[in-house]
Image (cartoon, rainbow, N blue to C red; front, side, top):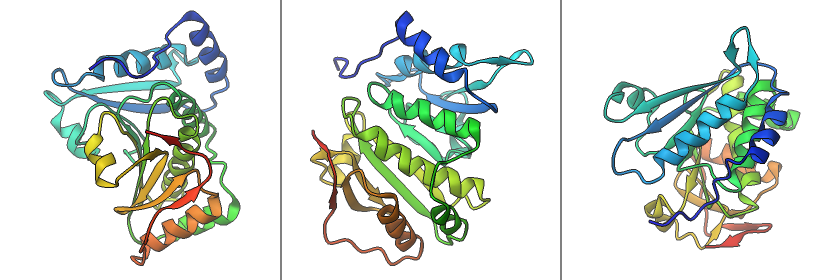
Length: 243
């Protein structure tokens, strides 16, 4: 497969990344799941995440962004612990926030923002949303289907990831937010009949095409958690890019 994404590891990119990550407050761990064979984007994913670690600030002799790398061939226990089935996967927290597929191209913007918000211990969500996520009972699986070239996708991914982060932060880790790269995972995109990205599925239902408002997104997340989510067709929520 020819590379269909941009992987800019230039000095200019490194400098910009270094300047942004310099504002990190608290340490953040990132868990990268790879395979030594049969994975066309694993090598680039590792290169990218090593660069992120290298350009993060140093404190007390260690990097504020700590990279943990696991291989399917030797670390099956970690794959089981984080419930990872596909490679590459880039995960945060206990796996509640993850990219399934390389977070390249436009997705680097979302990746940087997620790292910064975790480091700052702030999801950026409205107070009403934070309070609602504290009391969710049922489990919620959010799949945000994306492509590296999509300029709108990082906003949808960030929103979903911050829902999962805030629930985790509130001691209620019932949300799994997964950014699914469509070209590497065509079976998932096909399952939902995705024609444009970002497309957001919640608990197996395609709910949004585009980037939803936080309030609308919360309504559907709550419905899913309560087991009463039914969707006749996805809601068009702003701009999207055709596949």
